[in-house]
Length: 116
Length: 118
Image (cartoon, rainbow over all chains, first blue to last red; front, top):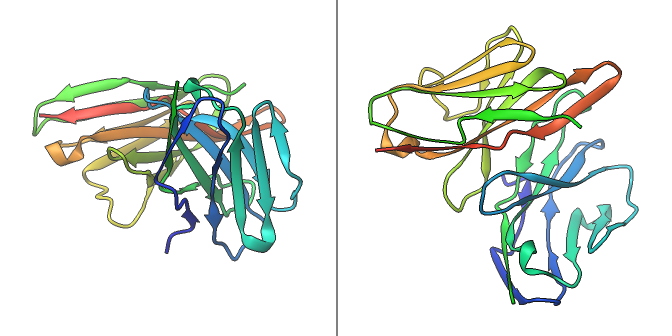
């Protein structure tokens, strides 16, 4: 069963538009971690955020913001005022294990294309 | 911050040959290394988990005799693709977890290796 679902396969926006990426996860654990990674065309994974299951506060980092809602098992990611450099594949991931095991289950990814 | 160095970045090999990919943790001791595979336009799928000094644990459907993992030291893990075939062409990426002093390091990824088998 898919543990992390990213329903949006591709999103295309014009520069300066906001874009929200959806992520829905499934777990029976009470302790878990959620992540977002960015993968530019070069392939490396760029870490964006980690959130543990006990911290439902939304977070803002520059043009990035995250909305974590346990009630709907969602951890959505918004890029405000998008730029061409934001074009990449974005992955949401889940780690269900406690602190000593960092195995990640990734969503299918959402390809974001920002047009000038 | 923690750095995982992965080499080579890309490799092209002939069908039937073996290819070795290295991942080194540069500033921490990686007690656990995860190896992921990513086919074009797909997500990352965990292949195996290796703990230093132990045999690797492979995910279902991953051939352990084909993908040999060695984690003999706390700073180095290798993945060898044996008798590679075109269907093994993929992006391979490692992730390390470990400690340095009082610090835990997790979810630290290497830069990936793009393997093309011709």
